[in-house]
Length: 228
Image (cartoon, rainbow, N blue to C red; front, side):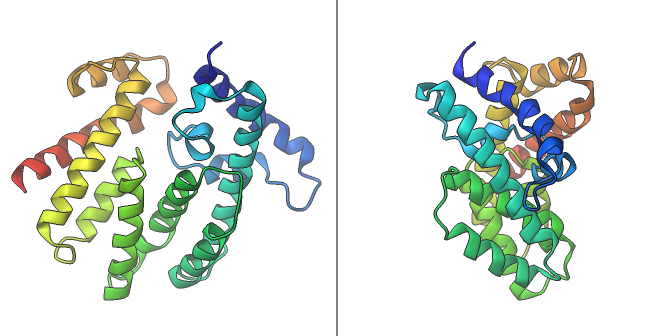
């Protein structure tokens, strides 16, 4: 078993142990753990740098649990906040604290949570748009595969961000998502059409809909890039 396979195998293990520990007040429940991780993000994506192949199995297990705890903590900050400003202030304070979780992935999940739970639902005031632009930039800068969320944010930022900047973000987001989709399809040289074909007939039926929608979003952002 290689390091990548081992890391991903820890996800159900970490989730399965949560109900046993739930009697402790600060321990997340399995439901919270699942909700804390945006669609189709592996737990290791939130807790471990990309060079994790060089890490030991013990380190991988530790980082997997650390990443899970941090994901749940950030979600609680966002969901318990009465509005986006409180969520933003809470996230910025949390992200400034030292932790063993991988910082770019902390930034990534924080951005995904506040965008989906608050900013993309709020009235598009200048302050909201400025915060939306900030967190969208963080998702793209960290190579997030959350392509549907990024696309929705870029639509909201139409007329706020300069068009050349939106085109650059669309291009970078499309490239990162395509890479992640190719990895999920186990076909690094595949075209988007070939990736879509693999997902259409894969055994991951519960994930197919989201993955297929992600492929379509990559196509749209790629077209936006070319038009921009």
